[in-house]
Picture (tube, each protein chain N blue to C red):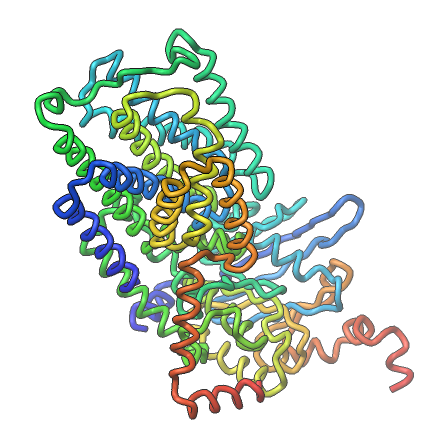
Length: 331
Length: 271
């Protein structure tokens, strides 16, 4: 818990220092995307890692948030500081609706139904031309007016600051959730539904809480993305986003808070680095995910923490170990 | 320890758990048929019977994992028949499971800490913005978890992942996890399965210590007769879903029907 907190704070401090060191716009852009994905991976991790159900429909919340922000700013003329939280709230409402149906299911059923929900939303976005402009998408999502007056580097800094704050908020909320009674309850449900109920936990309450929190965070991230890219189309709901998020969570380590950050960093940089080799990139990710699932089922962070535990156990005094070994034998 | 014992003393004496005419059938099979018994405050009641007698089904009915076909369950003179398991737990009826059920990937301490759920429950917003009171509760709950681990005798393994414990230790952890929910009546389903005779004796002593201190009463299903007969104040015998006998351990051991059920109808002639 202590180590986790230190790592998270160190990461955020480093991230805060970056724009003062680097003035390359491309690197800043990649850093913004890393943080955007880190928010998404953190929010997905709440469902995959803490509810323990594999959601393939997380893009539903990302897309809902993005469309909400785009529509509120283009149609209703809301400013950006209002649309991003509103995007989160809309996604949370969507999360409540979808969660109320899907969280009663488990295993493959949950996977399929969540996937269907995001597909349904994609089809709506694609076909409800009157509101969403269909496949054309909503272009020209307004940026704050003052950005026109300052240079592009300062503009990047502005978005960097927003992305940083979003990530900080996501990590704070996730940290609080995970290290609270509610987080323990969620883990108990993940590990053993019967035990959870026998100590008074109502399963649906906490899987719902994790899902709605995840939906809120990815909705807010979607809202941010809509303004930053200033375009929202039905591809927000596409499976490609989902694959990226899942890859990040699996590579980094599900069920840890640092894992999704590590995953977001690695995957975004790999994606940028392999940008020229589109097809190869996807195949490579496929292989990496297979390797991770086979050899490090708990991702990089799971691997690291297991090694640390082993080292600590080996450092324990040999006498102590002998005593416990003999006791074990008599048991 | 202080607040736990006063908690137990505040309760009025008398029947804590009253089971009345409980029935459960799965299709045409009557797993439990017209079972009635009472567990009083301060008592350890043993529920025994040959395999398939319906003991575990009975547990599932009382704790709400199954809904009874007919019959009632009263707790503190309030009817609780058919309530969900989590609400039974909140009332103070907490059980362990026949097949070991613990949170495998968590450490012993974390398991017991998780068991304190009811005590540490907070409104949603306090999860994200913990007040001083929340922090105090968390600290108290951590103390209590450490104390329960000590009471149950697992302090050596406080931070060991549950998956690494031996079979006997797992059974103890299961009891500790149930105790963490601060039950008034603790229901144990074959807690001594897999313990050797020495461990079983130790376990009996632990159970005795719990009464009046951490819990009001204990209802225990167990095949280890040495343990059941030594710790129980009363024993209820089930056979083919029905109640065969009830009484003190001595009475039950002398009961002819019970001897027949366990050893067969001709056992007397051979002995």
